[in-house]
Image (cartoon, rainbow, N blue to C red; front, top):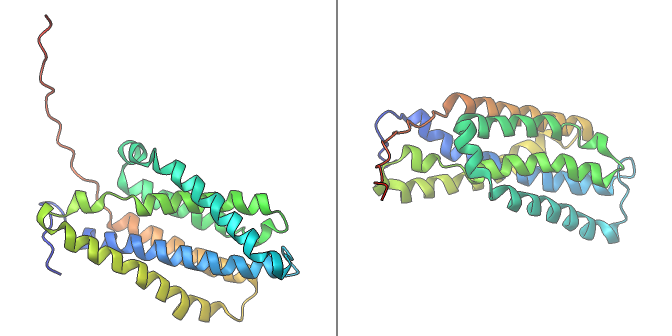
Length: 209
């Protein structure tokens, strides 16, 4: 792929980078599509067709606002808990909580609360520093291009595979199938991600005047 890695990292570690963007595209596309069906379904939220757009936009807005706030501290979270558990842990948590999204009906606030866990995973995936950790500086542009391809692949996985597999299922089974696949991605990332070696240097002593 024309990308040189830093010493101590393998191709398997590098593949965690595009997988992160695949998962972000996969998760976001499915949830946004499935939410529309949940909102208009009489057995769940029973939102009138004239109100679907407004309610859906409000839910997405709340999630994005929460994600922006998280972006201010995610760097500290990576430093405290490391790359593997920040990414894999938030993704496992999202896969668990999103299973209960159909059960949240008819409470919109509860739906928004469950989606906050997805926002945490989104923030971790989109802010991951793996390119800086793994890739030699001169090749980071290529690595970013490869990473961005993952968003397209994630959308394709949702529309071509997941939505076709789940089209005849009820909403509970759809979300269960989705979250099981999401948990599989989380375990894969936990295996592939390697923590960077942190070089500790002596802090130069400033003479006291």
